[in-house]
Image 1 (tube, rainbow, N blue to C red):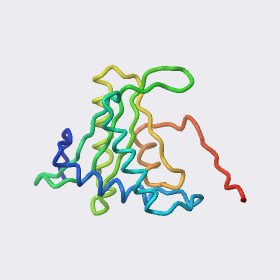
Image 2: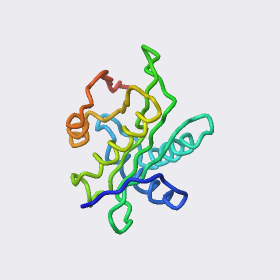
Image 3: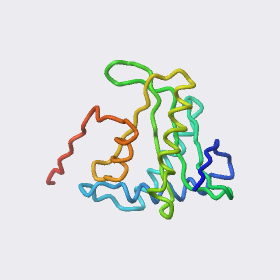
Amino acid sequence: MLIHVRAATQEDEEFITTLSLEAARASISPLRQTPLEQIAARVRAWQEWGRSPDLQSVTLIATDEQGQRLGYIVLILNTHDELTGEPQGFVADVAVAPGVRRRGVGAALLRAAEDFAAGQGLPYLALSVSSFNAPARRLYQRLGYQEEWKKLVKRLRR
């Protein structure tokens, strides 16, 4: 399959929202017991935040030869490492349509984001991934991403 990556347009909004909700549901940690309606509200709030004029971001869309949308990636350009303060890009969201997963779409989106970030002079590209999302973790490792931090969570009894 030939994959094209382009900048997102207003016409891509519904595709991004639908796929984002699906990806969020699939990424929920089994440690969390959050209702899906609450997750959907958080995803919509996250998307609104991504449109903030203070935030330098770009959304890229992967399509096939016929222009069918396959996935998207949201890249934030004006972030910094929390400890060192070094500038870095951050992958705020990436999702691939279920029917085309494990066919190179995610890799194409990440490579396009890497090229874009490098073109902006950024020395690093960071991302976060659920410990329970083994396919995504394998992809990131295959593309050269390295684990830098771990977040530990404990469910407390009330």
